[in-house]
Image (cartoon, rainbow, N blue to C red):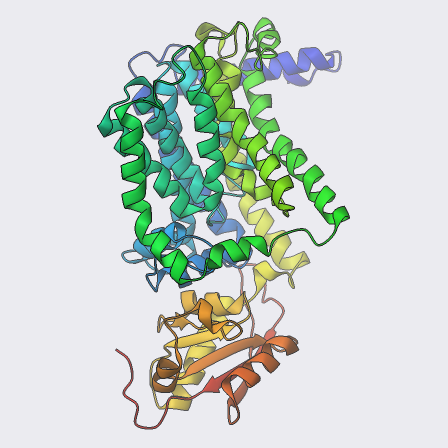
Length: 531
């Protein structure tokens, strides 16, 4: 092939490859997308949802690569105004989703992909307040290559939910900034309350908004407008029920966060170094793709993305919204001596594509949108191809890893053993370690509730009266002596114990068997089963 001629140098090969990609791109979308941006963007959202749902389903054998998924479902099954680790929104979303969707892996992966798609729509709306056209498409599409919006986002959790919420909260902020009415302020207040209900970490977004609002000659306009009263009223109304719960729960999520402090100075500095390096790794694919979308002069101009003096107020506000939350995260991590988890950075970078492509000196005409479209489609094709390969490697060469645990199979066996021991009574309460307990809640056909045997206060719906009435099954890995002994201590003598061994059958092979110990406190004789 001409592309691989022996006499071609590296630069020639790159140019020929890009020419082929450009040719493919113009067959996907025209060079000018005027009037067709919304349909094209809608097709992109559909493609994202379809591809990432399929990739996750084909590459994973269960949900255990991240216990957050089954944990969110287990929490949401019992509606509360808060939970011991996090505020309630991620659990509420999971519960609402599975109120009409089957409890299956593919349905959870579909939810995770939809969360990102809704976030993309919010980013589209944010950029639309500055510009319409192909550059807006490119700025969103470039995000698709970051692990934040794919490989990490398929693990639904309190961090990934922010990918959906922060862009829409930012849209509400810009709307209130441009037209500071009471109505727009109420909208912003509710949006920020929703962000807080997803994760308290959203405080750094609010800090970024304050910094952005103070940019420009009219810096006090929003702060002294009717919109600010609306923000306070809307936020207070939406947050008050959770705040009442928070006080009644002795600030459990805040105490959980306080427990995440570094154990030593060395560990603290390790997190402090690793966090920004991880964020750079997350945004590097976005920067690379946006660079490929620009001609050489445009790439030079993009180096001025941090320029402040030659930028207008809108550009400066975007820079503040992009950079200040990251800096605030570092500052809060230092102030609280915290373990700065790298995935806290998931929602920070949704404006990265726009920050690069709107740099001073870069015009919309310079942005090669068909090229990014072609790269997205090629990337999707690669994902579909490698998904079963990833599953094969995991199953054959790493059979003992957590992602291959027979969770669904164990849930079925535990439920069957409970029915046999109780004369067919439904399994209503389950517990165990952090992996098996929420997985039993998600996978058991009886749809039981979670009982935290180590910290019963974390599961207030499973009090002593309910345990006496319904009984409880605790599932501990056979080698986890801590789980087993704590269960025996918490539930008292005369427990019925039974070993259960199961194995997962994948497309490739039967995986390593895994044995758990099922410890049962049977329902009291004569107690009516819960319906």
